[in-house]
Structure formats: structure tokens, C-alpha cells
Image (cartoon, rainbow, N blue to C red; front, side):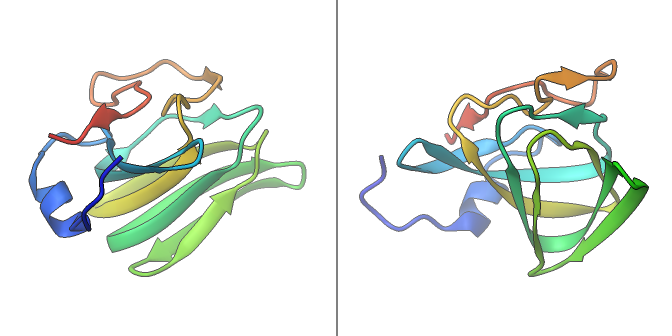
Length: 130
């Protein structure tokens, strides 16, 4: 664990890959991850954990499949949203965004169940920040 402050701007500047989060620190048994996103992720679900999103820059859309039907939440810079466990969701960003994610260590970015994963989406538990 880091014993010094972490610049999220420097962390995000250290990589270019989209949909490929980097772990900036851990809080108890949770990863704090940052990611650059553009285009569409995949529909997926985390059966046993919520997923927290905080938009640091840009705009993020999160499609949700809920009992009442599908809807999309729109998050602009500074907005946060938690996708409840067991909810199919699909993040996307037409113009690109930088996001902070908070989820249990070892959680796959593509969840427990998902549609086919395209080449531009990294199915990972997060990469160590270089």
C-alpha cells in the first residue's frame, strides 16, 4: 500500500489503454481503480457486489437492466453512481471519460456473467499502477 499521496492525474497520465483500469490504492479489501473509457463496454453483472463509479472528467452513460425495464443514467464530471449487485449494466462514453471505480479486490471488470467480450475491453481484476 502507498504511504504517499497519489495524484490521480499522474496515475491516469501513466497509461493509454481504454477499459483497462489501474489500481491506485486499496482500502481494506477494496481496490480503488482509475480507468480511461471511450465507446462501449459490455453488458455484465456482478452477482455479489455493488460497483461504484465516480466521473473525474468527461461524461459516462450507464445502461441498466432493472425489473421495471431498461434505463440509462448519465454521469458528468463530479457525479457518482453505484450499480447495485445483481443488476446488468453497460457503461459507455461517446466522447471519452476518466473514472474512479471502487470495488472488492479481485472483481473482474466484466463481472460474473457477460455478453461476448470485444477486443477493446480488457477483462481484468485491475492492473498494478506502474
